[in-house]
Every structure is written in structure tokens, then in C-alpha cells.
Length: 216
Image (tube, rainbow, N blue to C red; front, top):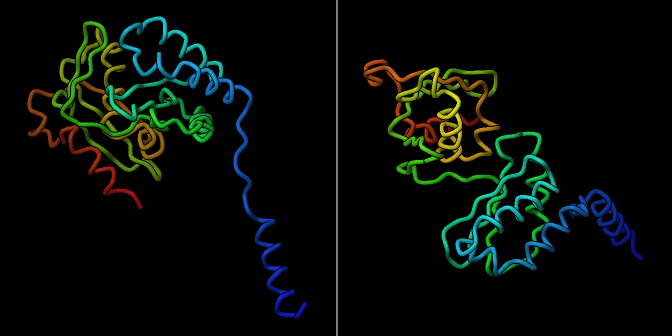
């Protein structure tokens, strides 16, 4: 072998040694996707028998990690299946590894983390309901992140816990779960003033563009 070919072979070997191997799925992740594939038809039509199929799905998903949650997209082909960390940052690596381990399924589009959605939507949990038009914000630097204060219409001591759940769901919907956890620092909530615009607050619909403008 010529010196030049020998050097090329050494470079190839050296580069190969530094190539990161593909992640290996854990037994729990493999078992989850085995169950998911075996029940694909039921999951695609979950609206016909939602309560039991969701209970089974939740049981298998939390067997992978206790904080994992899920969402389905509208009935379409492929149908979206979102794996969420439930707002718990410690579960982020599991979300990534579980989604990476998903087998190819033409009927499904598997997505890591809740994505940004139409800000015009409203979210309802039980008797409580909240829309983007009910929330305004102010933001200040918080280290390499943004400290956020959300001003929520109708917020009080009595309904704080219920509206907080809706507020965080709306925040994930507006900004996407990953950016909420990685781009925002401290998040506070306060009752909205009578005239948010006069108080120099921004409507929630502007939050995504504002956060994107702050990215380095």
C-alpha cells in the first residue's frame, strides 16, 4: 500500500472511532413500542373506546418514565402521537430516547414534546376555560433565559390552582414544550389589570415571536 493510501486508511479508521453509535433503546422502551404496534388499530380509532384505551396507554407509557404524558392529533393519516415530558425537565432525555426508538409506522407520526399550535384556540379542563386573549405577559432577562410574568384574566386566590394548570397548557401551546423548559426561567402569574395595554403588557399571541427574537 502506498504511503498516501495508508494515511487515508488511518484517517478513515480514526474518524470511525469517533462516530457516535446509535442510541440503544431500553427494554421498557422496546416493550412500549411493541404494545403500541400491536394496538395500533385501537389507538387510531381511540374515540370509539377512549377511556379504557387511554388507561392502557398511560399505564404502558408511565412504565417507561412516571412523568411521561401523551397527546393525539386529529383523525388523519398519518395520525400524530405526541410524547410529552409533562413539563418535567428531568423527563426530557426519556422523551427523546423513546421517540428515537419508535418503529416506522406509516399510520403514525411520532413527535417529541408538545408543539406550538394555533394561538387562537381555547383550552378547557373541567369547568374552567382559558384562551390566549385572556393572558398577557411581561419579560425580563433571567441569566441566559427570560423571566416571564403572565397576567391572567379572572385569576384569584380561589381559582389559582385550576387556572395555573390551564395557563401552563396554554404556554406549551403558544411556545412549544421544549422552548418553555429551555428558554424560560422563572414564571410568575398575577391577575390581569383592567387595561393590560395601558400597563404596557403584551398579549400572549406575541410571546413566541418575542422569545424567538431573543434567541442567540
